[in-house]
Every structure is written in structure tokens, then in C-alpha cells.
Length: 476
Ligand code: ATP
Ligand code: MG
Image (cartoon, rainbow, N blue to C red):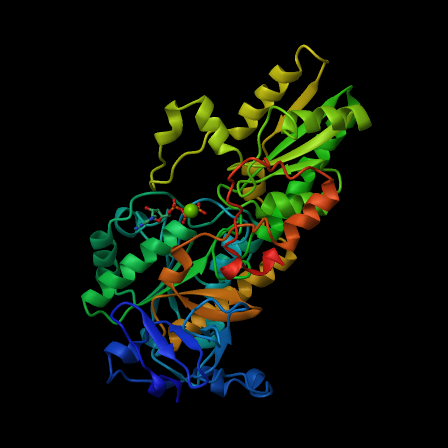
């Protein structure tokens, strides 16, 4: 058995050398610290609907390789544990008290994930007690819980936002774990971004320190695809689709006026995937600017020169800019507000859309009459319900999380790796960000599609972003 071949099990990281020479970055399991914990046959074994499926239950030793070999000591690559139902479970369904919380910013699909956790627990495992935590992490100790059942969640996937509410800040680990203990909760499902997953890891550590038999699972929320390791998560596809509406509006404005420029700011503080995919999808975009690809304004080969050229050629242009693009240029011109933070401690970015609009207007003021329209569709995009493909993504993530928790896995995030669902340790999801690799083909394809310059200064020491080792599927 795989676990028998364990060569290293260091204190906080469970790294296992598999028999075939690969490295498994494993997640904690109840059996690690409750060796005598009682197990039960998975109730799905009695369900006729599943008995027709060949190999419905996932073999306990099944792992999923990452696409690219990243570990220098592991020529066979890094693997993660495969998600899915196991033959035996670590909870008696009648004893389960589950809770669900959503934290951080809005993202299409939050309600679908909530719905499918409730449905998965109820239909597959017969769980009856599921609580919703009101308003993010602080809801654990500052608010009453909401009872969730099949009826309450029936229609919620058709609505944007989160029926549970969300918030930033307010992560008081002691109070949160006290509340989990007081309410008798033994399964915690946490939906949120990188900050939320860091918070989940801290909650898990405190639970383990107190010796509680409570499972903690994360479902990764990343509208802008900035979470590493995973191929994608829910919300991204919907965001790219919804961004088309803003780009279309920008195009209509731009083509209706002399020297019309439509400027659209899209989400992406550090990762420009939405801007890149929305541009590739649209065909109306003349220039796409993302955080990973530095640019400059003045002089030969700069943005102003390109704008002048495009306006001369076609009389109008559409620019898409990710919110984190050009922040270096912005802070050069305005040092004041760079230290502002939100309630979760994230640096607040200055509005690059407003700034660049003004710079473009100033630059061309004496040369020609410009008609520039700036559209910021951020909150409109975040608020829509998830599309069909994201709904499927939400459903599979929710089911994987439920199966993992029931099977005794703990302290993990579910995620699609190399096309398969896996359980990933929290630290792997939070230690770095997924970025567009501008030396990979995808960015070159975008440059060919818009025919924009790369804005690389030849005399510059710009270190292009080569960190392709962990790139997810969106970089291919
Ligand atoms: P997004 O950035 O996509 O909106 P996020 O999950 O990163 O989502 P944040 O506001 O950064 O959003 O964090 C969500 C919650 O996680 C907040 O309640 C915050 O207090 C908590 N949190 C963030 N970072 C940590 C951390 N290092 N330790 C404990 N809690 C954290
Ligand atoms: Mg975040």
C-alpha cells in the first residue's frame, strides 16, 4: 500500500514517496491522529443507482500527477490524492452536523456550491443537520446560524451572490473554533479565495491542537484564476462570458464617435487571465494589458504610440486592462495611497482605468479630439449567476469535498488538477499565485490576435515571468 511506502511524514506536511518514485503531497486524515476511530460502510454502497457504475469508489491509493514535473527530487513528478467516494467513511450520517461559510469577494457560482454541498450531504449520505454561517468568518461568533435543507437551497443556483452573505476580516481563530465546538459542528465547508483558504488552514490547525474530531474542507473560489496548482475553478468562465458585454459596449461607443476609444477594466489584481481570455474571445479588442506584462506609455514602442497608430488606421480602438496592470507606473505618479489595505489586509489597488484614461486624454489633448469611454463592469460581472459550465464545475467540486470529508480526509482544498479532481493540502494553494506566463504560447496567441506590440523595452532588464512550472491549464 502507498502509505506503507511513506518515507517522510514531517510535522505539518505529509509528503509521501510513492512506490513508482513519485512524490505524493498528501492531505491529513483522521486515521493519522485518531488511530482507533470507528469507520462505517459508505451508505452509497446500498444505493442501486451507483451499483451500476464500474469502479464508482475511488481506490484509496489512487493519485493524480501534476502535468509538469516540479519537484527536483522527484523525476516522476508530484501527485495529489484523487478525490471521490471511498468504501468506508469516518462519520455516521446521523451524527453529522455540517456547516458552510462563504468568505471574501463575490464570485458567480457561490450559491451553486452551497446548494450542491447540501444536496450531496443529503442525497448521498443522508445527512440531516446542515448550518449556514451568516456573513463570512465573523458569522461563526457574531451571528446566528441559518438552517439549510433541500428546500431552502432548491432555487439558489439561479441567483448571483451568496445566500449566506460574505465579509472580509473578522477571522478570530479562537472564537471561531469555540463556536464550532459549542454548536457541535463536526464538518466545516469553507468557500473562498486565497485569504479564506489561509484562514481555513489556521482553523484546521486549532481544531487539531484541541484534539477535536472535526473535518475542515476548502472549496477554492477564484474568479480571476489566481490560485496555483488547479486547472481552474468556478466563476472564471462566467466572468469571461459576462466581460464580453462590456467589451461589446466599449466597441459600440468607440465605433460611433470620431477617434473613439473604449476602455474596459477587468478583474485581475495579480493574474491577467480574465483580460487575456476575454480579449481572445471578443475579436474587438485592439490592446490587452495585464499585470504580468509590463508596459510603458511614452516614447517609441510605448502605448501612446500604438494608440496613435491604431486610431490613424481604423479611427477607433478598444483597450482591455486588468485591474492590476501598470500598478508600478501608477505608484510612480502617486505615492500616497499605495499603503491602504482592506479589512482582510489586502493592499488596495488604485484605479488603473481612471488613471490611464486621464493619461491618454492628456497625451492626445493637443493632437486630436478623442472620445474616450471608460467602462468598469467589475461588480456587474461578479454579481451574475454562474453559467452552465461553471455550474457543472461547482457541482463536482462540492461533491468531491463531501466525499473527502466523509472519507476522513481533512485540512484540504478540492481542486481540478490535470483534468482530475484531487485533495490538495492548504499550503499548496496559498503559498503562491497562478499567473499568466508571458513566455508561454497563450500570450503569444493573444499578441497575434490583437496584433499589439509586446511593449518590452529592449534596453530593459525586465525579468519576464518564467515561472511556468506550476502553470494550470489556462496557460496552454
Ligand atoms: P478574494 O480575494 O477572491 O475576494 P479571499 O478569500 O482571498 O477572496 P480575503 O478578504 O482576502 O478574500 O479573505 C477572506 C477571509 O479570510 C477574511 O475573513 C480574512 O480575515 C480571512 N483571512 C485572510 N487571510 C488570512 C490569514 N492569513 N489568516 C487567517 N485568516 C485570513
Ligand atoms: Mg484574495
